[in-house]
Image (tube, rainbow over all chains, first blue to last red; front, side):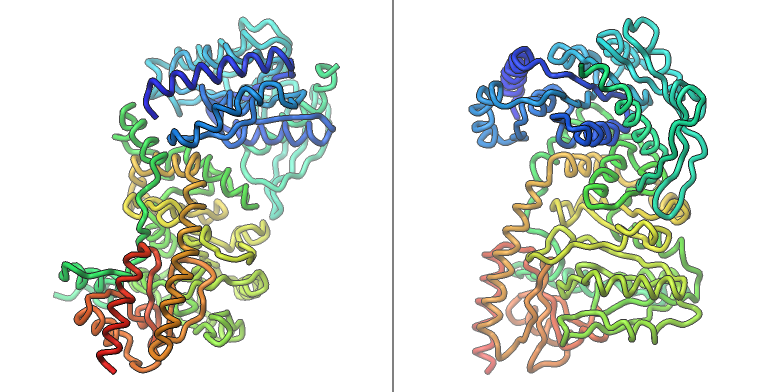
Length: 247
Length: 385
């Protein structure tokens, strides 16, 4: 795609998306961090759908400057093909006034300084979940501080609730300067919500969930790896917390 | 000077045929399984972007870029397979490196590995390299190249370490049913065997048959080692990138061998693989449509030569594996075609003893190539008779 076309498309989709959000005013839940966004997003979506909420989430990993508006407006991507983009561009204004969900669960990605600022000029998060800050996308940043700065920006602009990984020191520190309620979760260091006694079995993983040091629930999931345990835990947090914010 | 490890190795017959064909300037090769398509633009753009950012020149972690492995885990979960990207997935230099690393990791010299045949030629060579004995078990051509479980049971000895199969099968285009695969799994449990499942053609199934993998069953995850590649699904044969996944107990051993063999898969190709998983699925569907048309074309052309060939219509992959009705020596038949009309096909013997008296014809090539090859064959067989 030619840079000029990309720029025009980017701003066209941005302003249509802002118009849609202004018009429909959905609740916005952001999932961010360097890893595990997809599975956390899917878990939250599953929980909210089960509770009967009308939810829309990014398909695949549409979490960047063009992918995010497409997700919100529920449009396909034309990828690099101009002819594919044409019907999408034409149908985008109609998407603004079409049926719209009450809740958006959106992944936000950052691979260069300023990405988060741009994305947050489109969406204003009610709830943000930040799972990890690793060196994964550090190549796009002049320093680790600049990468952390992207997530600080998100934390500061979250309106109601910030859910942070207590096991990841850099993520935990994002609480500083954030003006909303915070909930901490973790496996090793605990927090408000903690997982203990993870046991791998031939059906997946079993574990115990503790809320404020009191046993809350035994959970069995059919997926493997600690990141799924965390996704499941975040699902529980949303499950318990969510109604307060939906009112 | 003789080197023990390689004294029984040979260059795969498919590659031998390709080398011979390359000497004929007007040769049409329906031999090697190379898609006629170029790698989709979206994948190339993803690579260009990564190159411009200067992030492809360094080694990745040995198991592969975390973001790619996470994407692989996501795509596996869409197919009902749950594997932890951090501990249970390795990005490899194509499927063949995954196969080599796996066999070197899970066998000892002298072990036996049971292989249904006819099947992909290179399995035998890798097993020879690993010092293992290949035990072929014939598929039943009368039952559309299906498994006969009793034959497997008979082939298993105390030295058997694994059953290694390709599903959908190359060269027959057979898809093994859930029942057949569960039967194999039962045997594997009974005799404590690994099941190595090479599924590189999984995206090219041409009817409503179920796409089932034993890797979907959590209880089997310590037994099943599944191999896949980007080569066929995304027309990326030259990029050399694939992956292997299994329970971490197996993967951590395979990782040690992978590190010895490759350090890591080429990072530039890993970015291409990311592009494929992020944006390439529509292209795979387009390829599949084209292969269905080509399969139908090749079957029509084979129908016209029904005095030379008899075939089972393939349900998957991009190969047809016709039986030769007159000439029984498949090497002789293939060389005859190459030398006289410069059409390259693979002799069936390359795929195991049960493949003799057959040839493999690829419909990965364009319709023009297929038509030209068959026009030449039509003329040649008329002249010959």
